[in-house]
Length: 130
Image (cartoon, rainbow, N blue to C red; front, side):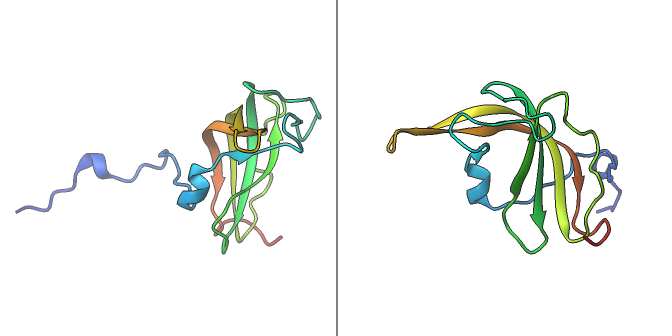
């Protein structure tokens, strides 16, 4: 049996980065905003509504197993780059769509982020000290 390299298995620098999370967080909706229908852009404070395309910034400390959704942005304010990677923190810029999750047992609903696409990722091994 020969050991020829498969040309399709080579490392691709443009490949989509892998984001690690726990299964329970992956399957839970990510709530945003201060109330059931309240969500505003972090920069310009425009009210964001269900169905709108948004930008997002999330982070995860190296020793943590959960991502924290820190900021949401309107389409116009969504940053193109991470400001400066922080050593020991995984950071993520992405886009998504605002949706609503309904909790019928308690007759409540919450804005959440759906259809998330990753734009930029900084692993916890890169960056400068906070």
